[in-house]
Image (cartoon, rainbow, N blue to C red; front, side, top):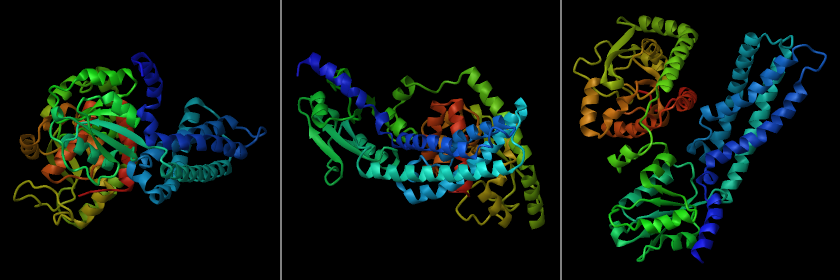
Amino acid sequence: MAPKFRFLAGRDIGLLRNPAFSNTAGALFALDVLLSAPAWTLAALRVEPGPHVSGQAGYLVCALAAFPCWLLFLYALGLYRRDAMLELRRSIARTPLAGGLAGIAAWAVAAAICFAFNIPRPPGAAWQAALFAVSVVCFVVCATVARLGFAVLVEAGAFHRRLLVVGAGYRAHDLIGHIRAESSSFQDEMIFVHHPMLGERLNLWEGTPGCTVVDAPTFDILHIALQYDVHQIVIAPDERRGMPLENLLECKKAGFPIVEYLSFIERETRRIDLARLELGWVLYSDGFTFGLLDRMVKRVIDLVTSLVILVLTAPFIVLAMLAIRLEGRGPLLYRQERVTRDGRVFNILKLRTMQVDAETSGAVWADVNDARVTRVGRVLRRSRIDELPQLFNVVRGDMSIVGPRPERPVFVADLAREIPLYNERHMVKAGLTGWAQVNYPYGASVEDARRKLSYDLYYVKNFSVLLDILILAQTIRVVFWPSGVR
């Protein structure tokens, strides 16, 4: 094939090699939209009050609000996560809850919009009940059909992706583990290219399904990419010195997307691989920047969200305090030193869930079934009600609604000595919820802290108001299905 023809053909092929086409979560979302949008339009028209009834504008507002609320709660309850996509029965079982919450949220949003703009609504509650019931049934049926259809597509290999990995050493082997355990694209075939200049070749590939090792004495990567018809090239050698970049440039000109190992892992797993982290990559890659406008918007969201939640949850806080008092003597609130942005120490507020003398022998990690936790404390921890007083810390500016979990100074000092870049998580304020909290259970060891740091660094590197909103949505799932609470 002549170079010019190869380049032109490669460009056309490259459009189909876009990794987005293999994003299974995106495909499932598209199925939900394609099925739910027309079905809900038809269903809403059947329930419409009619032209002779006043308040049609209010009905339209509620009907329009239902659809985005439905998609929001599908995401919030984790129905686009890898585990939900792999476990079809559990995924379908969660859809009625998503439909019910979406109906309630749509009613609240519509009521607020109609009140703000003085839009009349249909008289009586019958139309609201009918709209709610029809929306739940419509959305749940569509979601069930979408997930059954998605399972058929998966079984048929519709999301199969073929990756060409440059390297066959330890870093390449790590990539298998990350992709197989965490990536949302779970139908990957990997071709590993080995050359002596790339480092040692591991003998761990035999018997690993979906993995092929190709020896390339001339390092003709483009020939191998065309031979195996790969979708993407990942650069993951243990040794980079001497690697002929001209050969990789030929692949890029031919339309093959090329990505470096750490960037690929970051995109696929939504965290940063600390085991293979290179400071050069941190220095030269995008991220770790915080604009003034982003900080201002984040602060406004913090204030509004915390005040609204405090008003809504005030009765639960009062009842929790009464329960703590009835169980025995001691302070109702627990104050403890924690670390926030720039290493500043502040006193965090929580409802007391442990015995008064819980730490007479010094600070220790909380453990599973910790004997120091009271009976009322267990209920408060399981329901997360004990965390609500931290909203006052948010109002005071010590914390944010979203950010890394605040740790105690004694633990921070120990972890910073053992884990590289640990203090970088303090580039932002500590948070009530965060990317690590919604993706990893409570950590009570150095290894847990290292794992959670990989998520915290991803959040700090990719900080944005939109990411905060997505984390807040995912927090709903953690509240309904607590994991690792101690």
